[in-house]
Picture (spheres, rainbow, N blue to C red):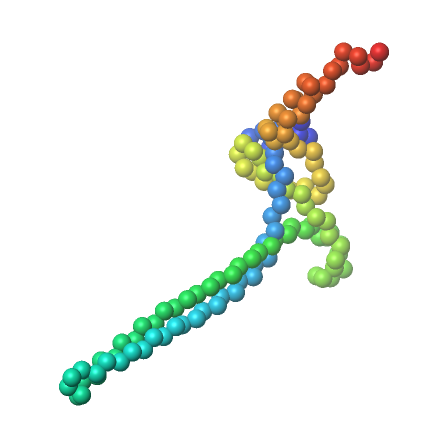
Length: 127
């Protein structure tokens, strides 16, 4: 059972998410030219064919991290911060952020927990 409820739909099923974006994009472009010429029987006429092939390769990667800085930090480059923990509602997708880890459960995890609880033999408990 989750210890939080969605602020939008009041659901108790959440998935813990992690969003990291730090964008780095590299573009490599290459042009390949193929030139050929032809001379006809009449030497006054020369045909030239030029074929150009462009090849672009793009490599991108990204990372985004959320951090909460205290109001009384010393300067803009202070390294004192608190990580945030993000949970997405399984029903409506609303994302909630907390500065402390919360106990959450999605429908699949709840099904697995209940199945495991039913497998335990409680008849000899407390004897």
